[in-house]
Image 1 (cartoon, rainbow, N blue to C red):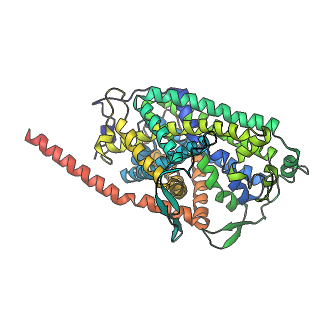
Image 2: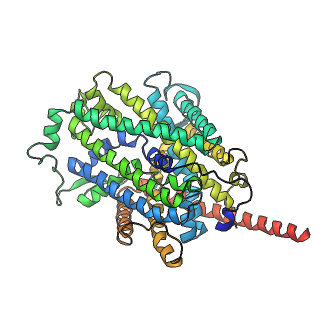
Image 3: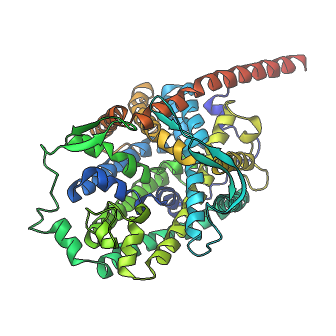
Length: 524
């Protein structure tokens, strides 16, 4: 199997260091901001039933994400190589753990998210062009009925080509093509759309806050001297949680309910680690990688927390699912969970939906570009280690990008779009993603022991307290999800474990290849 030294061999075309600090930060921001912040507060608010706990959930996400980014900064500066988190796990815990991360990333995490973001682009483009609809089938293969396998609910999806997923496939193909021409063109696209989406999100915060502020919402969420804000947020208040799908309802305390709703907020803030995948193409990576992680996550989480305060100033938290107006439905029952759209409708009556659709189109386009660009670098690194198709580990001589890796990633993403399974798969891997974050930050401690003399241009802020705090918080969330959301946790673990026989296959294949290469050399 290839060693890390072989992975960075100077033979053949090399990556172009075309990403400066602004571009690296744009990848962090652009990959994080998709469509989650516009939607997930509805489901979160139904669970917590408290303005204070809704904000608390986002603050917990902000704290964990920023600690995670600061911890990854040390690893990124220490090992600025293509593949990022895959490399950190390989070097700290061994090649199996790196492969399991890369396997899950390719199978679901990266490709499933790209598919979901692409389909979201298609759905919101349908606001302007009604012919683009998930009900407008060009080739309907059939319906897969739902069935239960333990805690999992599988199926219940439509398979085929409709105008919404066709739009997703066309857009993702265009972005893959653009990124095939080189990192600089991909970075230009990322910079433009990330700048636009940040401006758009600040627009939601400022315009929504100024023009959409509603006296009834303010009274419901902040009235009586802020007592309404703290309603249902006491240490002894119990919250109803259904165990699994169709399971019994149990009543849990404050720390447990905040952990349960992290499924939504952590997923909305995920993908900040994507910039580490592109480390081989970042100029002055020992400075710019840690800085981009800190700046990007800090800015995004600030916007997210402010956006939730704006939602609370425009719409009451509690609502009636059958309410005749946007205000009556509140945040909890915003139409289609589209909270941000409801806020913009209040600010711009008659035009809010189209304004919000335009913002989400910009956001999803930039998110898909960043994730397509970054993900291909992980599969490239895996291939260089002999753990993926050999062609994926080659750089194009002209563009010096992993072109084959980009197109293999696109092929699988398009299959997920057609299958309709991407949303279900993403539900399954939220838990697995968190486990890999725990392992990677644990690897920070391992490498401090294994390689005490290694050059560390940046050392994790607050080490060892803050990284340990992250591990404790994330482990608590995982334990809560295992208990109360088994439909998300066990399927995710199963997907990860399926990678073990695949790893054994690739390892043996690589050993056979290396043996044959050695025999060929001896015969020369």
